[in-house]
Amino acid sequence: ADVSRAHMIIPPVPMEWLYHKLLSPEPYYSRSLTLLIWIGALIGLLRRLWYRPGRVRVLDRPLVALDLETTGLSPRYGDRVVEIGLVRAEDGVETVFQSLVNPRYPISPGSMAVHGITQEMVECAPTFGELAERIWPMLAGATLVAHNAPFDLAFLNPERGALGLPPLRNRFIDTLALARRYFQFPRNGLGVI
Image (cartoon, rainbow, N blue to C red; front, side):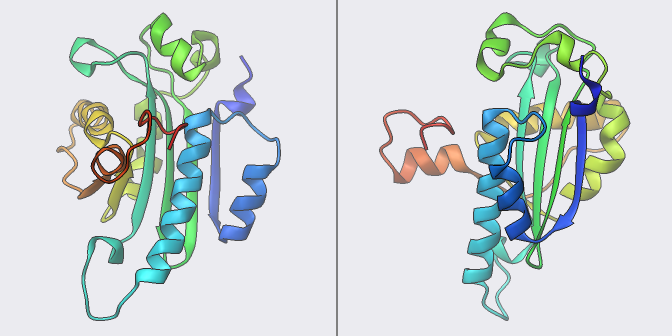
């Protein structure tokens, strides 16, 4: 496996740099993670446009666009995270974190067909516990934005529990629920939206 692509952290950067990086062919990004990063950049822009002093709203907090890829559909049956992507938008700066994750659990063929991440790609990646000190600070005090947020939170909270931490209590914006409620897309996957 190519371990140089298994884990990447990008320090806080201006949005222009982020757009440039997304358009250049660099390390592996799953299609949904690329879309997540674009959503994070858009949220940062919307937050600047909607800022009104004196009002505390969901968009007045730091926002974190979040996306996970998993070994399957249910953490209850042992499925785990195989990729995490975060974009934190705060004070006009986006901080990006992306990493493949070694789940120490087999990836189902159905999941591989969806996200394209193979067992070989994650075998040398860090475990979720090894990444925790970078992940949890990015989520602290933020409103989370995710496509099918309950699904992602269902995987994050067991990871926190395994480390002896309480469940996340962050507010969240579910883009899947918004798409279903306010738009009439033929399908509601990130690729379609």
